[in-house]
Length: 243
Image (cartoon, rainbow, N blue to C red; front, side, top):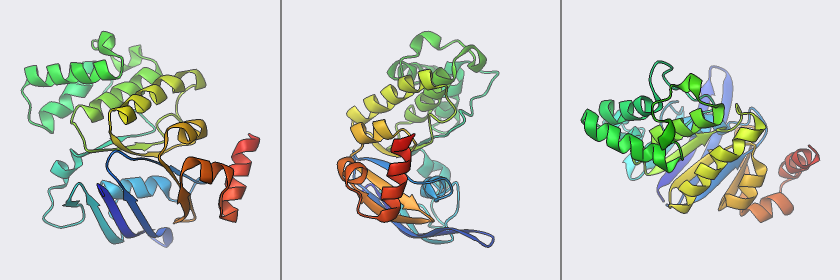
């Protein structure tokens, strides 16, 4: 397993957000995490790359013990790309500047090498022709694709997506999902937290349903969406399908 999280607990003060979560993800697998707001989905993602420190449990990614004191976390994070709901781009830099910065600062590439790799990453998300544009000159969907390019430029082994389309206008969502689909086809291991249920149904290998800090059920999309075993999953899926 390229990702193995065992017994993950997370407390924020008195709030017990994750209550002993186990999640294993195989190489090249696309795992979709669904569940109501506040169920712990985003916190779980952030524990996988140590943006949040789990209160208990173990996390191994690509053979690296993410919680070991000796682990160089910045080096380890190069293997785990993350795309957030907000794009987090530097407004004063071009699209290429945003992508190349990580290659220079994190991967230690020369400016010329970083620019070449950055342009290749923008090409992969269909934005090579926007390399010199600043974020404000790009649509929300284009900004999110630049954020994806920035993550994949570092050649991560795993990509984490935390609600990557929820800040976008509906007509811009498709362009981001198309990039995610092409990443999946290229063999990228992906863990996605999102409300894009049609995408989950069509693209995911496995759907994980979380509620109240626990994984209640997981399985192939058809099983989760059409024949969920747990009553909480049934209620959640029913609610979505009514909207």
